Image (cartoon, rainbow, N blue to C red; front, side, top):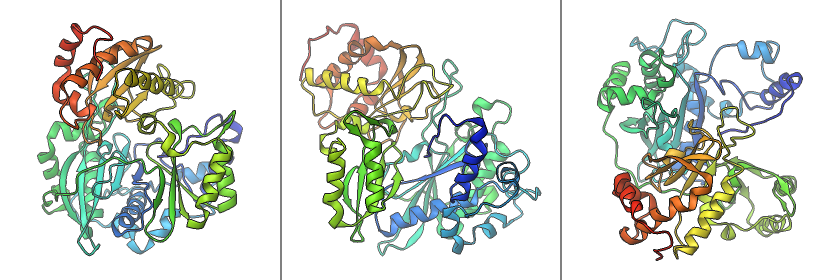
Length: 488
């Protein structure tokens, strides 16, 4: 979703922020109660659906940008940035500002002249939007306040969008009224109505979201409290028309888009896996230098993936061997040699970089993956792929509550264990163990894997199995399990 730049001296802060703005990027609203970020599928395929997904993600970013001049007054001495945000230039033909300011008289637009959508108080809490195409759930679409799915006809022409609402990850330990939630399908919106419907959803949260209890201020709690049908009717009251039913789409799949792919326009793209997003040079592993060498030699454009890796796009096919050679020279494994469970895994930065972290995540996750690998090999299920995630606190920045197996930090060297998320990221997991000492990981997971071996259905994934059987059945199995007694 973003770069995190750590260790900036206070005296350099203004220079850093103004430089980012003047090169056409932005930090506006990054921690505000506004639409903080719009994420789209990272796959740079040149197809109508993918092109529309990229285009409309920029439209929505422009539609919900904060309008206050306070940012430029503080960080740019009141001057306009030297370069307009790159996405703004690419969507000028959509007349986004005109659509933003359009007032139907139904309560979406407020009289505040500075922020016609956000008003004087902005939103109750942060707000996130995701955009993708049918079948591509590489971005965890169900974790967003609004998820938008491009719908094209057989000729590749844009007809409209499926819209889901009410997703979000953050929760607080020991507060049951806070919880992770997967978004609900709201309906289909024709392309000509999409900006007004998006405005209506934001207005519904602005006017009806919980402003009294910040822990319950995300839109997921409003959708949960009202139910999707009542929330949909609320949105329709702002729009002035009914929202059509959700259109059937292709089954969701998860792909990290790593390795080599054809873009569809004669060019290639390459996904470079990065463990937990950490770009570094360490001994013979010189990823940071490799990325610099690739960009310097081939002038490659890079895309950050939703799972903390990098995709290089628009690569000339004749340069493929050269790219591979640079990666080899810098000690970077080809994607085929990366453990599939490492590719699927994700962890937040946690200690020592995050003040909210209660324990390790990024720095310890590689060892957890290795320990799980040893356990899988020992139990003769080495080919099993399990989507694992880890965070150092319950806020959910690495989206752990969607994973098949998650470790959520709750104290020094201690984690909650969550099970039952979907391998295609369409439902939340459930809390299975309140506290697991990091030294007990193997003896905690072995009985669960043993039950999986003995009772799984044909081709049933680990997350689907643990979701199906539930916590009570797993706990009963574990109570009489003898370590080392089951292998496949």
